[in-house]
Length: 344
Image (cartoon, rainbow, N blue to C red; front, side, top):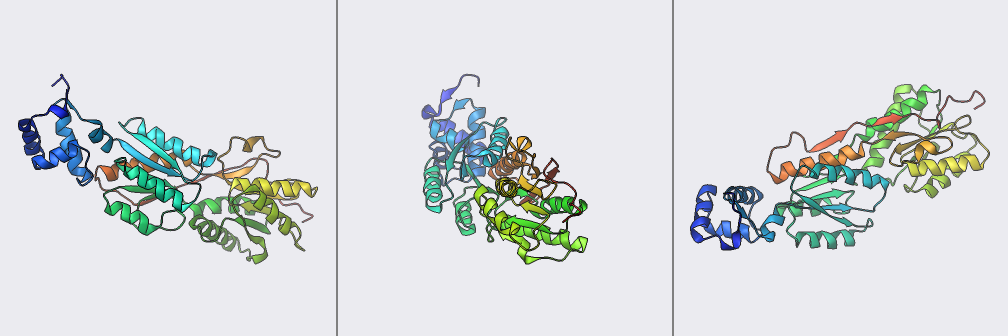
């Protein structure tokens, strides 16, 4: 039908026809029209398909139930911005929109705002670095809310799909680059020890050293807090060692920038005296640092785009080829790395 009508005036006969075509009861059709949450996504989508074929315009309560997604992000910065950009790009070809919440890395804020999203009849949730535990996420799924996670703090069960970079091989890219330049005393500035990405990047560090036959020196492994000031603080400690490192691999770019500041404050040259590598390549300013920072580039936009694709497959109850998707990173070589100095 080309003449759209409101479903508020759909007759009982038409509702009966929709119910018969959909293979559900008239009561179920009515509940779909009024946006009730106790109807499965598959049934709801099937009913809406027949309603649309009849040319009726669903009321807002029914429309939003199939077109509104929630996205949880810790803060708005360039790193998370690239993931969000990819997620929004994935929505352009779909009749959908995001409600985005900012959690400030606090569980109580995330929990409260997620509940508000649930009250708005959202269809699915994309979590970026969530504070929710695995059990919290599984509970959402038990409530018929599809969930996809990017950058989880810890490894999640197979029931919860994840999209992220392959951190072990990404870390090895940075290490193999430094080893190829002759560096053997390579320090790392890690993230918090309980984070999954920290654990995997350390594993890549160990693997690269073992492959090169370089023994592990525990004094070269230092914990950071992802912020530039922690990178600077840790580098001060490393420079005070009896035998300082000839290269530093920081597990994000902010800490690498802090490390560079500490090195230059001591009157040392980068990369002539010490090479520095970061991780993420999420800032447009990195090529304009002095020297420009060599870093491991995460495919952040692609992570966001693919996460929404996976979320839609869950919403449409389509099978997933894999529940934990890991994308490859690239090493971007700039001016902050160079051969080890013969004097060190």
